[in-house]
Length: 107
Length: 126
Image (tube, rainbow over all chains, first blue to last red; front, side, top):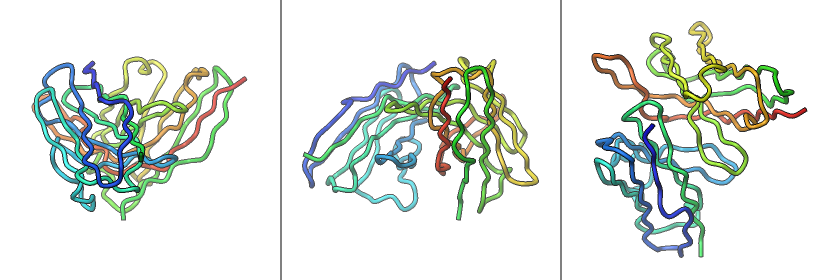
């Protein structure tokens, strides 16, 4: 199975800060990488697909980049409603695997 | 609009079976797959498996493949996940998610989980 390693596991930042989360795959997954947001007590939501494509309706402050084994998820200006846990997910090989999650808090 | 509506809370004893349903609205059911993902309390997301509603192909997480079965009823646009021989560590919220797929010469493969159901809490306890 492909292992997905996110860092950091948790992060505290201030409103307006630029926030970056990384995700590393244990082998080359090309751009077969998605990012999800899960707010407390809520269902996961797809934000970024194919490493860098913004899902319809998702604010433009969210972005993704990378290919191969190293990927980055960025919030350009953190908003209070962005408090959530963020997960990367690969679909290059079965089984689909998720990163362990990054919990984002407001400082 | 696209919506996935799951069945309600389940409480089961160890060794029992559970069958969770996921009824789809607002899209052509057979143009997508359905993935099942579970989340134990306070934990991350774990992919359970998927079914391609186009051709009923399935793929399950290896650790569960002997105990899980996924099916669809295209007449009602409903997907089902049955998990047998339940154990306490199967206690989790189970989500269904509409899943896009890509295909090559070897078959169809799940990709993006773009709409999720509200989740079904399954508790396994004696």
